[in-house]
Length: 149
Image 1: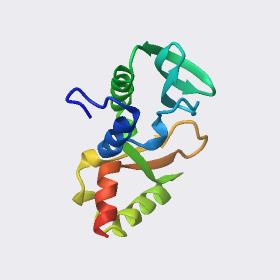
Image 2: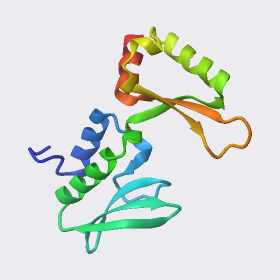
Image 3: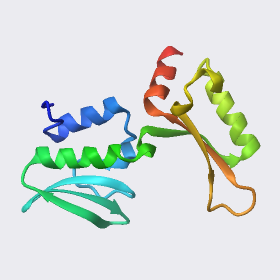
């Protein structure tokens, strides 16, 4: 990795893993993925775009790989959700709460012992009836918890 950032897809992949970016949010070899930022090398240059349902949007073209890597990195890290993994839910509130507390307990911790910025909770807005709750944990925190247990 250069001083300015990852210069190749291989360097970028390693950097994204170190940052704790959820794997499904990006694709480095041109595959169309649902809801992912994609980097591809084409005949006319390097491209970065958002792919959803085989559609490409927000397409940007670059002369070299390092510029394309910088663009993908900037896009991915600008979305806070890419740093988190789902660990409990979606489920009705009482079940999701219990599942999250159990997930934490099996790793030797509790909500009060991890930073409030390292976990989050939200309600699934598209479910009719009682809303379903989901819990997410920051990927780097999840790795630390799994290594200590």
